Image (cartoon, rainbow, N blue to C red; front, top):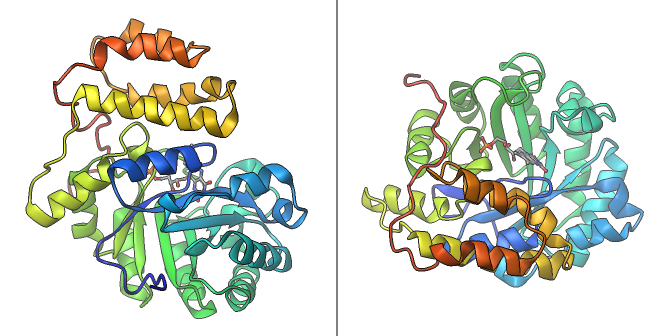
Length: 336
Ligand SMILES: Cc1cc2nc3c(=O)[nH]c(=O)nc-3n(C[C@H](O)[C@H](O)[C@H](O)COP(=O)(O)O)c2cc1C
């Protein structure tokens, strides 16, 4: 069946794009235990058009990752259009997303990412052209604004009028970076102003946060980024909580670390034996908040081989205690 944001089961639950994190190995691992729509990490439009080999590899995926959305970043509407057409015709994801939210200087200084929110005419032309060039839905991920959280209230209409099929709002401004809170009230306001589906993003760290952000914003769904790192179960836990009022799937410590090993194997398959070094960042998330595990964590983030990882995890692989549900507290204010 053709993928359509309008027809997806509500609420829509999505793995948010994260550079160097939401690669094929991680997305496959998430799909082992849950079934969110996955957004792959952003790829450069310019590099895609130039046929850069590493960028081409980044866009590859396996069928088990579907439904999958490939995010693209760039400043020039013509290059973005060419890149979107290449991604659509050569890789066949379910959808394509434009990054209009990245706050990193390297990106915004080249007028990419959140900088497009300051260039509404260029952003609208980009959306119109890309939409006309591809056969799959086109979505746009924005921030609340550049300086002020109200900027998205006009920008969201520009995105809709230009023909986007869905909009995601991370409720922080570019100026905020990752400080403060994601402003869920402003996401509610965007939802009131557009008729295309809206996804809420920012500070969703548990199934209970998913329930709360949906109640507050009235959004059609959520994008979860940091809350999924080290906890791919968050997506199925959220679905269970929403459907039955309780979380049924709580992995044991043994199940949790068995999944870590599966992920590590895939990571090495994707990046080669040296991949274990870049896997350390995931290990740090998988053990976040583990009480009394300071030495274990410090040894883990220094491992150099897969066998060392297996040896360190061995004592945990028979532990039938449930993993703690939330390993990162929600920083959101109590009232909205
Ligand atoms: C390591 C990392 C990499 C990210 N890379 C991207 C990216 O490639 N594209 C994008 O739109 N957002 C990216 N983001 C932003 C997230 O998708 C998300 O909007 C933000 O982290 C807020 O959601 P959260 O509170 O659930 O983490 C990244 C975030 C992190 C932490």
